[in-house]
Figure 1 (cartoon, rainbow, N blue to C red):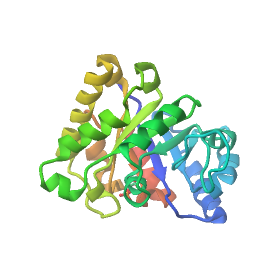
Figure 2 (figure 1 turned 180 degrees about the horizontal axis):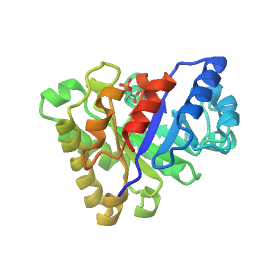
Figure 3 (figure 1 turned 45 degrees about the vertical axis):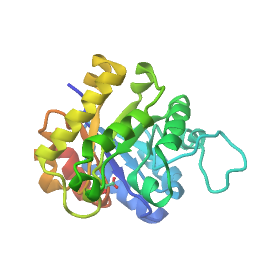
Length: 251
Ligand code: PEP
């Protein structure tokens, strides 16, 4: 049985005071929950104050992205070591918004994964097809390319620190989630790819999160699917109440 991993991706939302308020409320609402891993991914500017509030609690901290160097002349970038330094255990890599708006390619993401996994940060690696790709019957070929090229040359040992997030782009921020059948089908396909690349044991143990308009109303039916092992939540993680309800639906 894979322990569900539920992460809130706050994206470019919440100033410091708002972040503090949100995480304080969340902390109270999910206080006794240890059956799932709970992660919040605030914007970089809020990481430190949030980390101070969640110290010693069941809430873990993640970055939304990072670069593949420890330090140097990379204006605007953040090193994985800086995320660790501020209290993160996790980072997201390859979110579709990074792929779409910041031209992050499979090859760059592969370099990031190989570098970041060696720093000790755990990674939520995002994959997913666009609406055009789904309508053109390309879902499987897109997922195959993103998984094979993104995870190229990683080892089964390194995969222990990687979670896959299946996020169909057409479902992100649109209010239109994948059905439980669509999610299960894609997750099972991803797991089969992982098995082919890394073996049965890795495939059986890798958590695969679903992301795309997860809300309290649909969380339970999605998490009831055998290959759905958690969520990456955008909009609904911006309110403590709705994020806590999603977490509780996974217990
Ligand atoms: C996301 O940003 O990863 C996401 C899934 O967003 P939303 O839940 O708002 O669709």
